[in-house]
Image 1 (cartoon, helix red, strand yellow):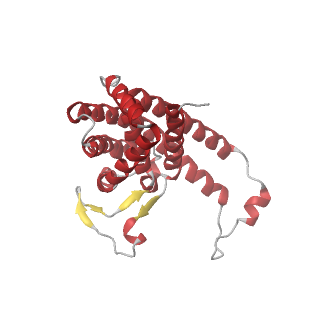
Image 2 (cartoon, helix red, strand yellow):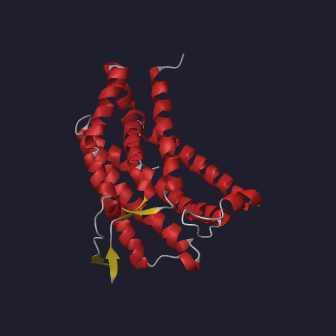
Image 3 (cartoon, helix red, strand yellow):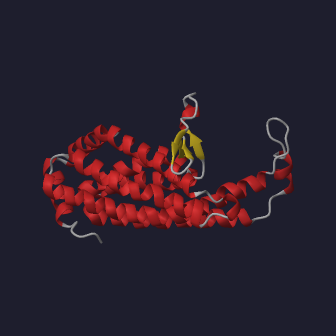
Length: 264
């Protein structure tokens, strides 16, 4: 029979890993927030002639779940818990994309290409080319994300625990939101820089203004969501405290704080 502490870690780890892997896979798509809500492009002049529209990587939709889970794990399991999950997630993501890359090398079945040879309007469509293009683009995303993800997670846990030193068990919103806002500033630009500039083929390489534009809007989105989701942090703490019981909850939080000194 697993203890409540073990069960809690398994649940949080499952939520964390599922959303981290999904976010990496869907992150190759850039979508328009304006079009989603039927609005015209913002077209805000920015960065040396670049235009700032509300274009975001699809992965940002579920990354807030990862932020919240990270902060909850940080609160109850400390730096060791976050580091353990971060390294496991990095390994799982790398494995997933290795398998996907191998799959893109397999020769397509003729009938599969034939039955998918046209789109809904009857235009010619090469499904195998589309499959490879989408998922191999993800390889750049994964390289950038793994670097940014690990840096961001280590930075997040460090700032979180630094703030906890001054706030104690109070002001959850400050350490949760503050750590997320700083760590995700790094993450927003490192991922895009590596994926769409450093490792991108010349034909698909983004310009620096484009990187700054999309990175800025991604960060603005994360900034806003981190603030809006603050009530969920309190709800998660409330539910976990009820599940663990006051005594065990306080004991785990004290252990997490005591074992989370230093950056590494």
